[in-house]
Length: 456
Image (cartoon, rainbow, N blue to C red; front, side, top):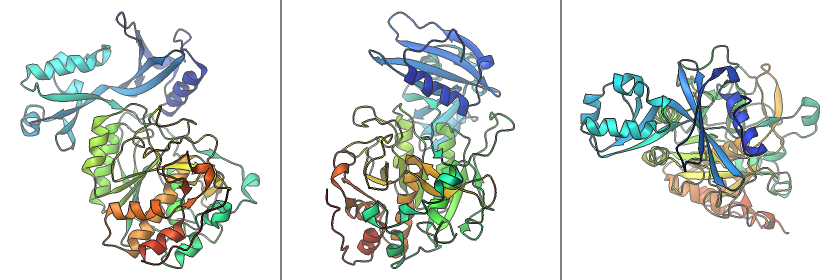
């Protein structure tokens, strides 16, 4: 980070530094730093990423508490009442939803080519479009979304762990084998994982039902970037076909890997959802999030209401009722937000939490054994809400395999009402419990759930 770019807290410095690493930004990439107008509590800097630019906005939200937001400085998201006329006037704009476009400033008009260099570039764009006959619109930044960090353990650390996460509920597991007594999944049920690249030749994925990878390309990504293991780990929790040491929640279902730039912008995610729809996905496992509320993000999820979206609640040790994180904090009927639990069923200490719909249930998210990408047989234990969310995606796939005509609302209800309740989760998530695949499968099959809560 540049020496003359100061931050008010160590926590913010860590947050921005992490985001900069993921975006492959360096001090040499800084183009300029803005002085905000009087009364404006933002500090804004502009960085180069490939041929594009990235804005970093540091905002003081309370005394001693500041938050950094990353956004593409060369584009914005526009919601317009007359999309046909807008597309005719600006054919280079990319439609990412009903009446929603991504506009790239340099492709609109020479008058707005330098908007990204201005602190108030969204207001300037709004004024420009109003002058072009489009006064009735909403404009938002094209945000970058972060992926909650996954931590890996060494092989020596994981050797004795096995797949506790799939075991009995008395030990915090989801009771996978009992669920498989009802169904191991049906190949007609497609789960999309919108994430980084998946290593298909891994021994535990090679025989799984994995469709050809679809990709949202990023012409501005740095060259020589290493494939990230995040997507491979998440995919293996759902469909791994290894032995009992590495068997997925829904090994009979089909996985649709959708690679997006790491990390993605809102535009990238919208394209990813379009690919998921076209690929017939009923479920999307999504581990990306942003602290800034975006109505275009909410609309994207709402427009895909026939897809059940399983999201990671994040790893900030924060109450989402106080400090929201999106999409977990959107109250939409097709979202299930997942916090991380440990081998006793308690909340993992870093996991976000909420006794509201911002956190529906817990799932195993500490020392979870999954595929790695170092070689085609490598495994590692993963820790984070990113690895908790695919457990729920896999169970949703099992339930749709059992009851293929069920609605997304029914699948969500069956998952939430079948959790293993435990007192220590009562204020950590709305259901006060962690995922139980066996109870959910029996519920979907119309059988008694037969599971008592774990005593305090």
